[in-house]
Length: 416
Image 1 (tube, rainbow, N blue to C red):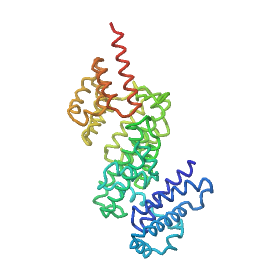
Image 2: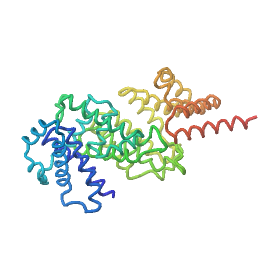
Image 3: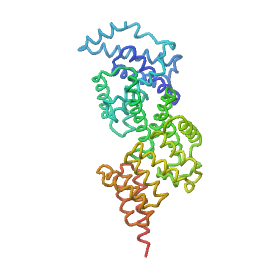
Image 4: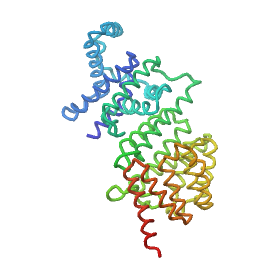
């Protein structure tokens, strides 16, 4: 029942925000909200959506919170504190729509879930559960880990937040920009894991990309004047527009240059182009805006051979200055090869090959294989394709790389 799922995910940060604002105890409130969401998924499809869904969720979550307190006989002090803070009748009373939380409750939750004391995996898990409304099992399935493992990760994250004494409020102005960058990074990681699944049998996981776009849209509505946030939303839309063209029958991976561009989502492309073009007129370009601009150049090309590679190379040059990292260099090498030839691209890979962590990354081997083949060295390309296939944990990518290796091997066999 998609309408119910959409409604619940929309209401989750609002309901949790109301409870935390009222009672504190983020961990207990979050557990109570999750139980209320579970009850709604069971009851609403049968009994119908209540007239005031948010008030219904607040009422049920409040009851769960009281029940949890009363059931812990060894912690009577906590029960007394909750009862003193708000009488049971008040806790159980539905919250009127007029008392709905302000829009920045979602922003407060995002800042809390992306607290700097948490690791990136914990930030992602907590954001998807507390702000996205996903159940622990759904998050575990998306990241291909046992539900018990994900439950422990979320539990540790909530305990860590409690230990830091973090409060449900926006960070002070002097910390806000840095904390917002952390939130954007978490949303970027969620999207990337969904769009290019790092492991498993699927090319992409639409549940994660859809959720990342939804959360980024919500944040953009709250902070429309942030250029990097606008750029991130544009980047997600322009990238996600390729989704239907990225795989063929049987889930076979189709690289960008070989995709049927008539299958690209023009609605997402048009919105992404509008967002990034607008942001670049009034905001100083940042990493997300530059990546969105690169994606926009790809989107503008009717065919792969009409791609404006000089412009893409120039954008990567700027990106490598303001936000240098190994993956930027890797992508830059592929673009440079299209303009200055494969030897120039291979030269850019040399520092990456000397980095121990990158040397074990399958994408470095895959790009090296592609450039070696472009350079007319099929024997070395064959070895690199096989290495990339061995290193990847994504089954679709592995199949694609194995096919490339087999193609070169067949050519070598057929040649005199």
